[in-house]
Image (cartoon, rainbow, N blue to C red; front, side, top):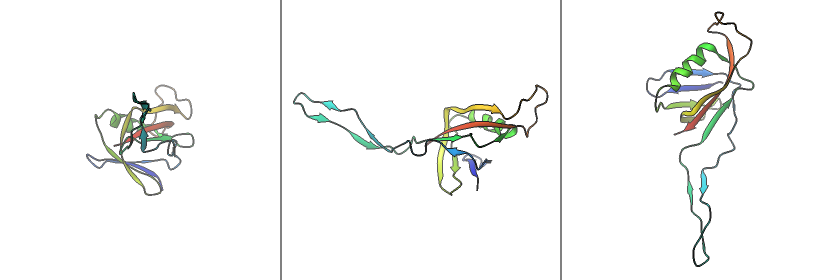
Length: 133
């Protein structure tokens, strides 16, 4: 199985390398808590709530590769304001997501490519940064 990213507007689908790793999968909690506020009587007021959206999904490229043509397609998608997509995990889970402000990071060619020798199949590493909505 692979990761898939599908645009919700036109159903365009991109398959991502199966070796992408969800870097921050367990770093997030839906439970949020305010800083303690002390009242004049000395009582403490702490508010808690459950976040419904906003979970980061960082797809780490350490063991994954992406083609130049796919990277260019992702860069075009990043330029669309408020684009929502469905990310499907290789295990079948799916999430409604959008790109974060720094959508693609750590973009590095796997081998040195001279200007003018670029090819759509050239391999890169690139982290993909998403947020659930």
